[in-house]
Image (cartoon, rainbow over all chains, first blue to last red):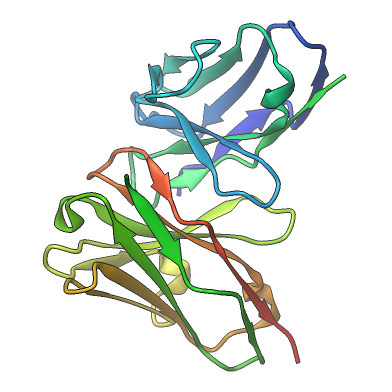
Length: 107
Length: 118
């Protein structure tokens, strides 16, 4: 199975800060990477698919980049509502696998 | 609007089985795969398997082979996932989610907590 390693596992930043989260795959996954946001007790919400395509309805402060084995999720100006856990998912090869998550805290 | 509504929480004893449902609405049922994933307390997300509602074909993770069964009822637009021989390690929130082919999971059910305890 393809392993996805996210870093950092936790970050604390202030409102208005730019934050980035990295997802590294153990094998090339082309652009078959998605990013999700999950708040406590809720289902994950799709933010980005195809490594860089913003899902409909997702604020434009979220962006994704990368290809091959290294990918990044960026939040250009952190907002209070962005406090959540973020995780990546690869869909290039079965089984689909997920990163362990990055918890984002607002200072 | 697209909705995936899952069945309620379950409490099971080790060795038992559990059957969860995921009722869909608001889109063409046969045009999207339905996936099952789970999330143990404080853990990451683990893919369990998928069903193609068009023909009922399933594909499951090697970890669950022989212990999982997925089915669908096209008349009620509902998919089911049954997990057998439960252990306490199966305690988790189980989600259904829809996706097209190798696309991302764009809609999710609300999750079903399954607790396994003697």
